[in-house]
Length: 322
Ligand SMILES: [Zn+2]
Image 1 (tube, rainbow, N blue to C red):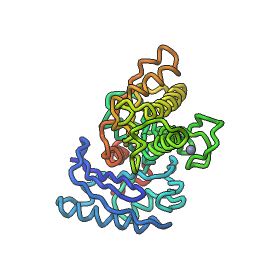
Image 2 (tube, rainbow, N blue to C red; image 1 turned 90 degrees about the horizontal axis):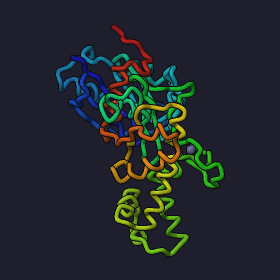
Image 3 (cartoon, rainbow, N blue to C red; image 1 turned 90 degrees about the vertical axis):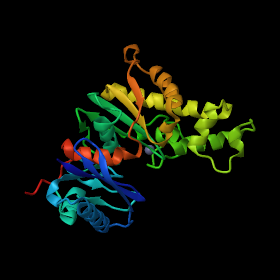
Image 4 (cartoon, rainbow, N blue to C red; image 1 turned 30 degrees about the horizontal axis):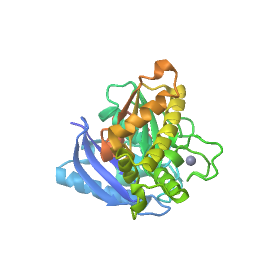
């Protein structure tokens, strides 16, 4: 039976899973991400953990069919990671370097949002669909396009980067990427909280959010669900802009299904009931029935997607050494 290591490298934590052919995570580990300009120490940390897992499970390196890695930065088809703001790495041929340090091949790498989308496509809410657009509503807004089990990479590695689609060219505040008016500024957890705070500051309308010492996007969605008028304005605004982005994306890729994930997707059907009409308002009538569903894998999407990178031959940048 084939085993894969799925590795999700985040800015603070690295999640590692020993994944079976069928997508079960048999062993899980988490380790802190060492920050710095050199990826080698991080890869050495990963190597040690993988060796521990192999020893515990009575497996050899040769029993592993490959390693998939999700990384928080743009990755191009040539296997180059073009920097990670969160960790401090510059441009690096990460797959090749990882194979050298860890000694298992092949190593496949991909951008974290795109890899999570692949995980959902192969093992989660995208199963059975030929094509899928995933949008991750977290601290930022990520995205990925999957067609027939393959990530659409694009020439510069930004295909599916829906969070930085310009929604409002007249916005005066800047997005984290340096542009102004990106979807992320309106539809991310950060954007939702900022807008709620601004509305609270600008008016003196009664709102249950006014008395919270620290406000999260979850609080805003909960208040909106409870009928809080100000919170409702905030989530309607976010949903409207997300609807515009999904419709615009549809005019380019027209996927069979749209999957909504990330922390904010915990607002569940209430969130979908806001997004769907906002999307339908922006598309041709015959596109209105597109399936828009919630992600199914939660925090496992990265690790499973990373394993799926190897299984599906995505982002394969180092060959199996026999
Ligand atoms: Zn942006």
